[in-house]
Amino acid sequence: QVQLVESGGGAGQAGDSVRLSCAASGRIFESSLPGWFRQAPGKEREFVAVEGWRDSSPLYADSVKGRFTILKDDAKNTVNLQMNSLKPADTALYFCTTTSFSEFGSTAAGDFGPWGQGTQVTVSS
Image (cartoon, rainbow, N blue to C red; front, top):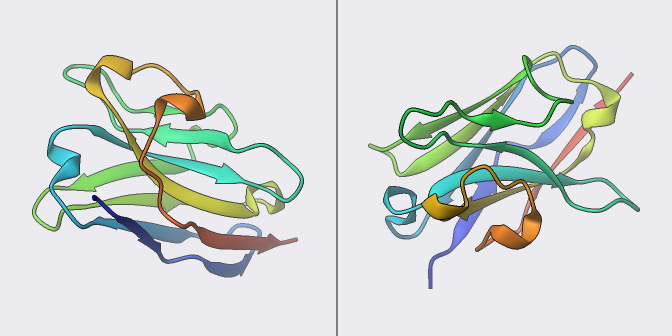
């Protein structure tokens, strides 16, 4: 069974930058699209970003567009989430996941899986 392991979370201040990384135990990123979700306390898991498919650019949630960038590193079999200009509203547990090529365009958590255990990002004002 493929495992996804996130790393790189931590605590910072508004305006800081953080890079999250997700490593896969298998070559799952070659046969699916990697993505990121996040979940804040008391809230539902929400879509953050997903890699692009064919000629389409990556998709981003409006709340992170222009600040976050998803980057797949095929050589290292990892996918990173570069997070710039962090805001307190970005505080959440961040999850790495994947979706099938046929589901590209969906931002529903039910269309993604498997999931990592998550890495916490905390941003103070």
